[in-house]
Length: 254
Image 1 (spheres, helix red, strand yellow):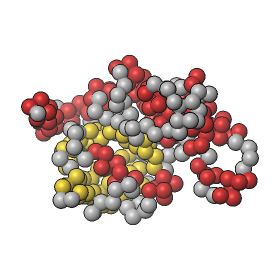
Image 2 (cartoon, rainbow, N blue to C red; image 1 turned 45 degrees about the horizontal axis):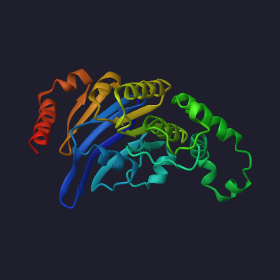
Image 3 (cartoon, rainbow, N blue to C red; image 1 turned 120 degrees about the vertical axis):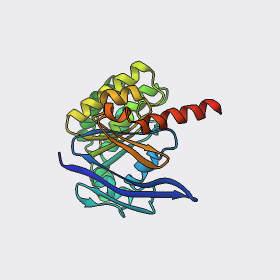
Image 4 (tube, helix red, strand yellow; image 1 turned 90 degrees about the vertical axis):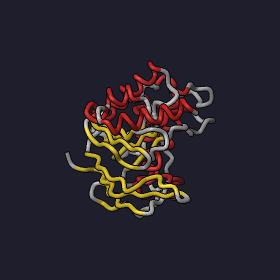
């Protein structure tokens, strides 16, 4: 498979703290890759560096061969990056359908003139309805966001990201806060989305689901990459096991 995302030597410092130290990895076109590691490993910082939310002290980031290292966040999104957040932030007074419709109409919103003259929203509504069905919450389409359970909100966040027509979907802990059944169902949905040809990079602490659905793992610890490979092989590596066990002991002692 071709390399879709090429991340080279990403270094991020926050007030003297090394959040990322020369991290490099690649994501192949059509892959479902999980970026894992203990708390504080630098995973979310890496996603923010890829999308341009964080400015690294050093980095070379290419999307489909194009250098995006110095591009602002909105330009990276236009080229095909979409990021979902661990804390879901939809428009709560709007329906689920309207939330996704708004994202589906992002091309019109970019132009004031096009927004003013575009009266027919049917194409965006139809696209939003299809995406809500894809993520399994089409029966909630006409309901407002307020009062919806977390499982529905997580799926809504994925649908809104898909409405942007990304080439690469970045997921920040999509299963966080979900019970076992909800997590398994959403993980299955992500596999289905990936099977349709969309490349997915996921940060997730639910190792059971990570190992079940991921094609490859990249492991960070203390801002460094310590492993990269097939899930079963990676999780047998001594350094990976030590990173997880060590952090669990520290947490128990505190």
